[in-house]
Image (cartoon, rainbow, N blue to C red; front, side, top):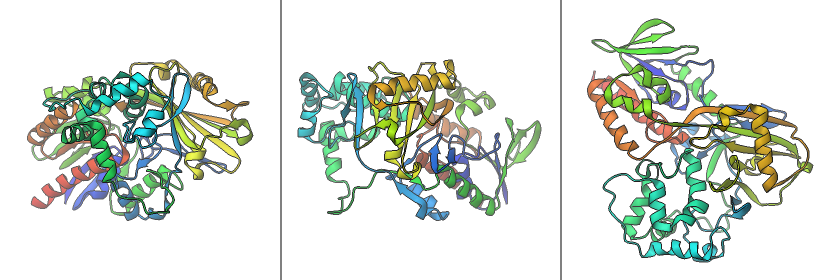
Length: 459
């Protein structure tokens, strides 16, 4: 039986262990807990996510895995409601029928206060602008500026899309993040036409059925999924070795020597799932130097808990994102107690503000009290909040968001091919590579495990 090392006990590493077959598995984790950025805090009836908040239901691999490990009945959907964008110093409802800010219905788009009449007319030119074939990668910003114009990009598109990746939309790679938009545009001759067709062909809702949110969570938080997955893989025979600091990986004749807490150990195969900021120092190969220069964004979440008497919020919604041209430090806010009813005790309100943009140093420059003060200053512009929160939790995720700049996915594919040829049986994978969402990390883990399984059975 082959001996396989998985470096990192985050969602990617644990999922890889789950999908591996016919192998003796060591999961090497530098910290003293599994889950990486995923962490759930529970107290006094609150269930609060300190890292990622949820996952997209349409990316079904996470739901399938959760069901397979016995958590299917614990999955909950978010409450539905109006989403908002803060622009021009006020909250505006997201236009009805839009997909990631792209209009698919004329009437709500014409009625929105987010765009001027000129901005709406410019967006309508999308029907007449002939698409170009994408021979090379371009930025998300350049694509939407051409299709819908500057105003639609800045007030509608950018607040939604850049928030997902924590990136500058004018540097963010279209090919690496939202290639579907380009495919729809080229197929239909217009982005709006393409998205209307996608919406028309989406699965139809059952008449009379209650709307179901597009995000998923667990009754006891994402940490419960991680804990069950860790329990499942250890029951399967994998060993999770906490406080294991990997400092080097060296090729040997048959496999790899990994330096763990100063001691070398041999493994036949290796799956590296830690961020590129951790593994880039282990490789000096020219193609892998890309990771030494790949930028990241530091972000923080500021959770505030109030009694419901302190917060006046009559909006039937789940929160808002903020246009980049607004004078705010926060980039978004989730009305958590409205979006996730399981998260908050009766009579309480939970707010979750987000801080951190590409290139800024606000997270590094302020202590927790300073970040809370900045967030509260911004929230007071948008909501009627009286008094101080009952408690606050600040979570910093330093250098946590890898920036997929133009050309990223082509470099990644070249690196993956180089690894197959130069480091057989050693796979680099995870959020620094093909996608950052939780289901995407699971999908990448499964792909890596299947590659190792194939080699194991051939051997």
